[in-house]
Length: 262
Length: 279
Ligand SMILES: Nc1ncnc2c1ncn2[C@@H]1O[C@H](COP(=O)(O)OP(=O)(O)O)[C@@H](O)[C@H]1O
Ligand SMILES: [Mg+2]
Image 1 (tube, protein in one colour):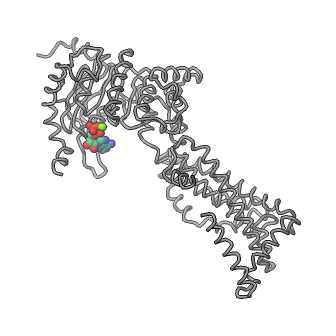
Image 2 (cartoon, rainbow over the protein chains, first blue to last red):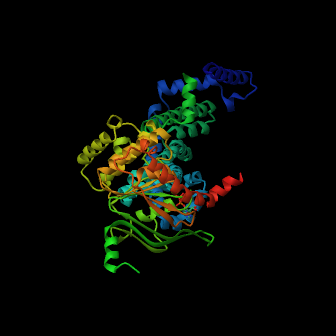
Image 3 (cartoon, each protein chain N blue to C red):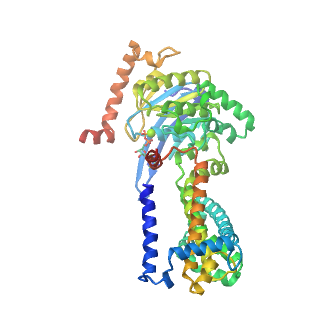
């Protein structure tokens, strides 16, 4: 299994390198793995034009993280409040539908214009990217809460707020988590798009600069750094999720993969 | 001749639950209405164990929901200890048919919910919950999650969760129907033991006639929907009973034959049975 995966990677990179060296692919536009690797080495050992690579990564991660935390908290709160409040949900549903139909990423230029080249505009883009996904899931999760358990809690003596806290939120949590998982990726996309449109630091800014200099190796190297960051973020989310979902029986899918591994 | 008014009042005062000429319609979105209870009259005395039997879908769960206050009658009245039901009464406890444990909480965190909801101090509530886990024999499983327990153990948790609130009225909706026969027998005995030390009034819904007779002081047979009380039988078997053995008692067999005659007609009338017969 792993052997095959490695084989594909090596084959793909080797093929790319060869095609570029034979000039079947124009290295000016498509670069080649050896040049990209050399660029990555330069970044990590000698730093970038704007300073240390770690600083660039940190800027992007910080923007994504801030947008993610704010967007996710706002989404969870809004989803639960509207999910628990029939009237508010009915009144606002039209606006939610409209807001949801706008491709959020087109808001990025507005934020960069209004909030400037600093972090605020990137955080704002990441925020809107995250907010709607988390909101929609939290709302749905609240609506899907088991009526039997709600009735049970009522009879045991729970007040509406106690029901929200002990039944609604825990049962919406698996929905919320599913959305957090994908939306952290969105937060990174938001931050990077914001940086592409105009920034002083960050991975997106490095890619934009490389693009401006017709430096294909720089663009690809920036993408690789980005992929690594996104994968690490995804792994972190998975680990957190596992911890919090201890109570749940392992799903059939998980049991299969575990059986496959052992 | 009507009984004297004073006497009638006295009966109402002493009964824990009283249904008086209750009718209930469910209104569907398309404007149609379905009558589920028709002229329903029932009295449950204080400390009395009543079982409701009737065909599936006749309106047994609906009856319980009227007692909890989750539903209101379309006409007639439902009273607890003489007072009309207006909402969820703190004296009522409920054991559900389906698993209504909180899957994200471990056993003791489930049992402690009632006192916590009702404002008990945390450490006192946990002491109480631990004691109830000992009573139902699950002290060792306090930190397990519901999905790690067997069906019978989950029912024990549900019993502890309900009894910890010291309900004066205990409602049970086919609580043991999902268990295998052996476990069901054990749970029935356990229930009788728990109940005998509380003096609670019980309404136990089941479609299993033998279960009804083994447990109850009185069995109400309901008609196929809309449900009304078709007949009621006093079960004069002595207590304490061992449900797994009482089935072989000649008196038990005699009573169940009698009631079965009544029930059979209704089961044959119920739409579910007709569908089954058509298949
Ligand atoms: N909320 C509801 N809305 C409409 N119809 C309902 C509702 N609850 C129950 N019913 C109907 O009332 C009848 C009695 O239901 P139920 O009390 O659950 O029966 P049982 O518990 O005896 O099996 C059924 O025909 C059912 O479809
Ligand atoms: Mg039912």
